[in-house]
View 1 (cartoon, rainbow, N blue to C red):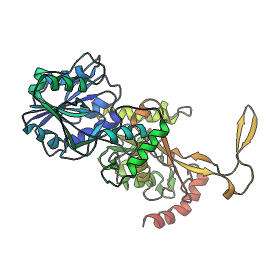
View 2: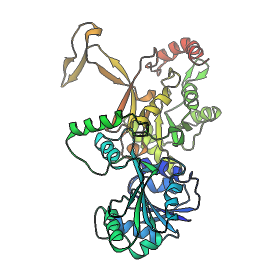
View 3: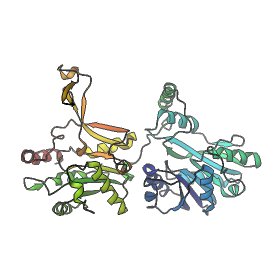
View 4: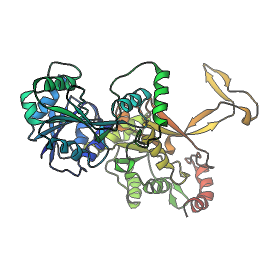
Length: 454
């Protein structure tokens, strides 16, 4: 039985790679994938085209219209609809959808939708209540959901999706099918996907939280899986921007410590040095990392900020068909990263669904803010640290910031939904830049690395 998988997208760069990787890992391999894209402005299409897909574009989006467009360019016996931000849970997802069509009276099947562990409480509540664990045969109930569904093609030939409605085209279709034929619908919980969004919302936040807590506390290991993106399946690129000639710490180039730490990551797929110096590029290549481009001298002027340099670097990577799912920013001036530090940042981002993660140093001492020539003290004064219930966090961006490419493309580095990781390891927040700090670091780096990495 051949399946045509129709995926509707608009700016799904964050999810589309994981969605397609899961599809192409299915046990049932007789399928085609048709992407119907609604003028995405991010890298959704570029990332999707790394897979064997057929691309269609639609300008005036309506849900039924987009599905019908995909179906008209398809060849399958069964039409599978999947949202671009849904990720099949198991390799048997497609197989479990299709097996229901062995019954000739089945017109359509929809599968379970599970929230991500970092979905909002509204969405967790909605998905956990609606999509249960019992299989259902529906002969009167027209509930149907095209975020994760399958339709018999010969039924679609008779009853295509309504191209006029702006929402719930799935339930409109299901109602028509049940009214006009002897067919029935099936809810198949074994064909499950992770879905970031819910299906409806109620703004009673406290009631929502209470419902979610009860559902999560039920003694049922299947009620809520720990659903996150798989960091091992993502294309994660470490980007090390270096301006000018190599800095040396004793006889060893300083950048080699950062390169070595990046290469030790279990999640980073490739390490790239972005530099304006041919000598720096030679040292990087000797350390067996990539230098696929040189940044122009005008991006090394003092007034140019880091986000502009990163924006240019990402553009150069994408011009070379390198589309990272995540970027890890690392500067050479922080050689004292503890073991596993970068992987901890990455794990935090994917597990919590964050835009970015930034390492920070807690500062419990009073701080001073100078504005218009006047300095004002902030903080709880001079009481002992153990009695203070607040602190200031000092950002250590160059130590290792994990973020999404679309943020870099927009001219920023850290998104609104950002997380922080406190640094408590001695020396890790020490930045090595000028001659004095290089000389000091030279005295302790070798012993520090032996202590931490050997």
